[in-house]
Image 1: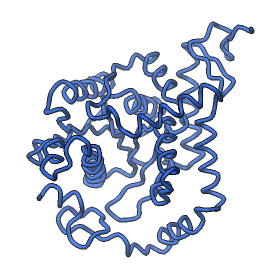
Image 2 (image 1 turned 180 degrees about the vertical axis):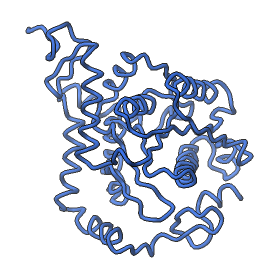
Image 3 (image 1 turned 60 degrees about the vertical axis):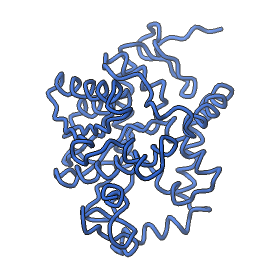
Length: 318
């Protein structure tokens, strides 16, 4: 068997990526990640250097790595950490926040911290229990709260773009779940660039969507990024982890399967096919400004499909 060598310099590699037929050493792999991210940003027209970016950071490897990459590339970028007081404010949330704050301090970057219990009087677990969802449905409450705070913070602080650290494993697992249930609306929101459809919204982008999770873990390690390695206490047994395991098995037998699965979806979306009508209707609303389906919440000013308060305000106000 031929021994792998770094394609750039011939040195022993730190990572072999069979899906790319590429092996790279500890010096050239981080450079490759930064170069590829810039290429994806330009290819998918995510944002320009004149726009202000806000990265949602969790203290994990993906979001901190994304912030590090955009910082290296010279973009105008700040971070947002949302303290959800997961697990009743014990080690997980405190440690996650400490990692994010330390990262920002080391690079003299601005980190905005939103404390959910301090601002709204409850942690997400308390919110979930109050609306009788319990731990089993806490992910739905968590997602609702995070989306609202990210949108509102980006709007109130004058940012143009909101970036998240979703990697290929995240996107492929979500796509598999949506495909099995044939959730068309959810599938349409899986694009790497989601344009704003309401004045209070900002464009949402996922610059890391073509990188495997193991690639981002290697990048964080080589860049000596101190991140929280633990999973969220509520993630155990979730649907996303189950689908990730299935895709990992497929990837082991067919290297590149995850990437092909997701990129094929994007091509199908671009070409039309089964999603043509939904995609066309969505584009019409963007071009004409017809946002009849999106109303404005009278309490927070964020978009909603409901008449009256949005789902977040109804949650907070009970």
